[in-house]
Length: 81
Image (cartoon, rainbow, N blue to C red; front, side):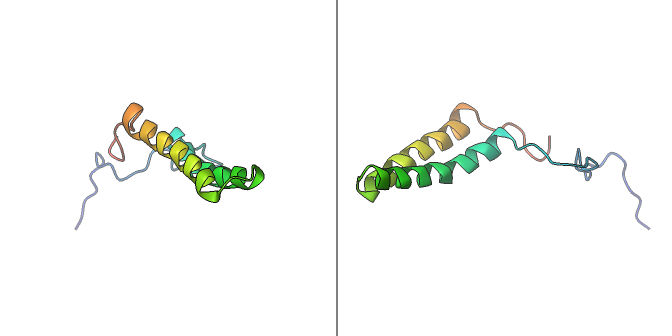
């Protein structure tokens, strides 16, 4: 017979909430990466630049955001906290 340990951490906090959940800042950072790539490609077509220049600038900005999320303001903790 198995006995449930009440101190175990198998319950997700906030799982009983109903309604939309607001995204974290890291979710927004991840959403901004492809948005910047698309914005760079769109800007290249609007400004009559080569596509490599537009996507290169967009990817440079996206890389800066990823670097910010990893090194300047990294996520602390994780699933355990």
